[in-house]
Length: 92
Image (cartoon, rainbow, N blue to C red):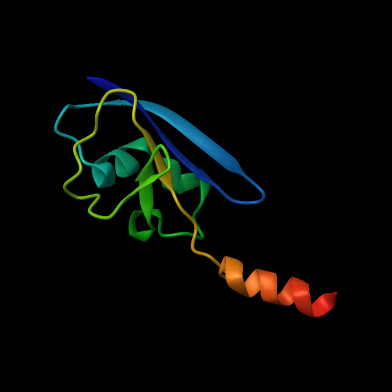
């Protein structure tokens, strides 16, 4: 069994769940097993971008979990950083 964490955050709620998974578990399987979806019913967590320790994983279905991995689920951006900078520049 491998000890890992699954984490997701919104401005209102941050949740990190520590779980144990089998060695052949993928990221998608780990997210489903963690039960984190129940805390964020407004998001389809299995369909969002994911990473491990801040490094984006583009194929979560084939990534094999390693002991100590921290799976991060990323919220979709409302605006890109460039759009935010343009808006700030307009208000100045």
